Image 1 (cartoon, one colour):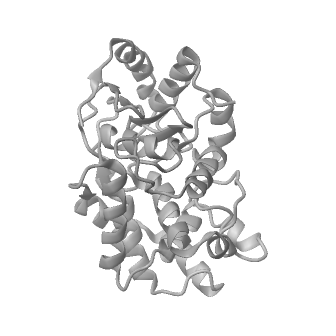
Image 2 (image 1 turned 30 degrees about the vertical axis):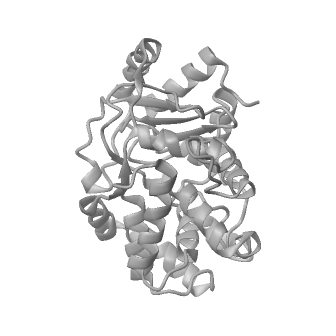
Image 3 (image 1 turned 180 degrees about the vertical axis):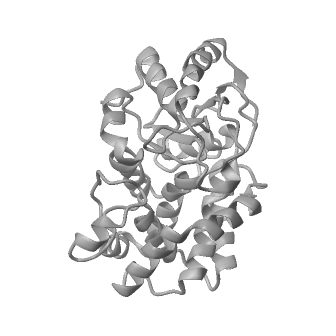
Length: 309
């Protein structure tokens, strides 16, 4: 896939990049700590195949929490809506993405939504397959199809780093296992989840994935319905209500685009029936969102009237 460089976008990127000095890379995952916090890039992919970009959009980054949207789509396709939401809720939370608090206080004790870590772990648990490798390959095949890039894989170094340091996620798993939300060995689920989060691609690939969701699950190039339209609708709704961690409400007001962020600095946006957007800016704000990426999306939304509201 080739994108056309855009001077207007380049100017917006340079302006938004000034925010990077106020952010910090995600050093709690050691392998992410080496990212260049001054970088920022963006790509927009349209249903007719047009693509515009600015910055170093060919550089790979790991999806991290952006993968939660894609595993949710696959789990819904595997298990159905009733099964999925019997085990994971559908409500936003004002708590941090890795909080255990609501698991302890909610009755029944299930994660509030699929975009927080507890909910995402429960969703990953639902992916059908005979083994961790089988489930991982199904997920990779699905993401390769969404992106149109058959070479997409996961970053083994980052996956291992997350596996070695993911003790809070293990705690979430054990709590959910105690309450019957998951029933597989915790280390197997952690193995799959960390590899899922370490799946990597560039902004051009991610913008195309965002475009598939924007087009209600249909491939913008072939027209194939990769994700059923009702599942694509559910995914975009969660992106609006929960996609930007506990800053989702403010983001909806200021930007108004269904979006999901990840702590490697990526953001995937899906503007319904219009385009897919991908941003990468590793410097994060205190909520875990790309600080310059959020600023860039605010400026783009205002300049191009992108808000869906």
